[in-house]
Length: 324
Image (cartoon, rainbow, N blue to C red):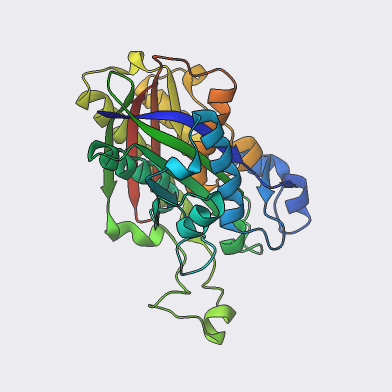
C-alpha cells in the first residue's frame, strides 16, 4: 500500500510587499535583494489573519482536488513554526473548521523541513491502515520577522500549501522519504526567545529575541551540501538516476542555493520549480505551495517522478521521492 498524493491546494494572503517597499523600510535595494536571493516580492498576512486561516484555505482546495470530504479524513498534520498559539495545536483548529470530525490532528515542528517531515509521517500512517491523510504546511513568517533587520526581513513571506494522501495499491505514491537533523547547528537559524529557555519578558522584547536570527553565509554552505546529499540519497534508495527525475521541488529559500544544487546534480533548471520571486521563503509552506502551482500549471502528470527536498532550522534536511 502506498500513500498517493490525490490532491493539492495552496493559498497566499492578498497583501504584496515588494522589494521597493522594503527600500523604504530598511537600508537595502531591489537590485541587491534580487541578486542575492532571487526574491522580488512576498505576501504578508493581514492583521488578524492567522496560520489556521491560511491553512484552511489551502486544505479546502486540496480536498476539492482530491475529491475527498473532510469527514473522511483519518489524520491532519500541520507543519508550522508560526501556529495560531502555543496551544492548542493549529491542526486542531483546522480540523474543527474543516468539519473533519473523525480525524486525529497535531502539529509538527521542523521549520522549513516541516512539510517533508509531515509527508513522511502521513505516509507511515497510511501504511498502518489510515485511508486519507491531510498534510498542511502553513506559516505566518511575518510574525517572527524583525522588520528592522535588513539581512533577514527581505527573505520571508506568508502562505500555505496542502496535499491529501490517499491509500492506494500500485506504483503511484510516495516511494521513500529521508529525514535528517544535526542539533549542533541549531544557532544557524533560530528564534531564541519566547519559549521555556528564554520566556517572554521585557528584557526579551528589548533584545528582540522573539524574532528570527540567521547566519546567512554558514547556512548557505550547509544548505547546498545537504540538499545535494538528500537528493542523491533518495534516488539511490530507489535505484534511480538524476536523469529519471521529471520535476524537482526544493524549499524556496534562495535562488543561488537552488541553482548551485541543480548544477552539482547535473539537473537542468527547466526541471526545477521556482516561485520564490513572488513569495519569498514561506518556510514549511514553500514546498506544498510550489508543488500546487506546478500541478495546476500542468508540469506534473500521471507517472511523473517528483522529488521534494528541504533544509531548515534544527538543523534539519529531508527529501521525498514521489511517483505521480
